[in-house]
Image (cartoon, rainbow, N blue to C red; front, side):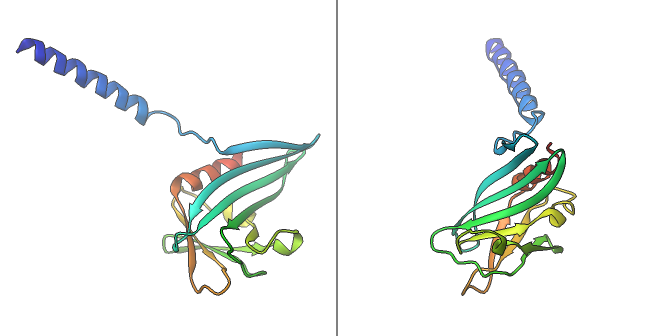
Length: 166
């Protein structure tokens, strides 16, 4: 019986050590990437694949361009699949819980992107995010009354890290 008690104690200690390692590990932000665009200009981006309330897939890209240490732009690009058409130029409404964060202006007309892509100025929105609380993006999808994209806490955390990345 003593042999089993000793073995149980060893397994308990090893389990506790593994738990402490996992709980105290820093989070990984593997999808933030840096892309040099010119000698004095860099782009940082976070890429996620998320599904809306109709279970349709979206590629969600938050990116910022930094020139000589100054943030020139911070935009959110949404790519709908398959055959989704966004209404332009309508703003993107951003909500956290019951609190409306604001509207991101549609800047799609400044690009040559297809109609299934939305491009939004996200600079004024991202600075208002004080926690990693999940967000709801109310998407202006053509011929659909209410399309919401839930941005989970790990994505919001990554976006907040991207904001501070230089």
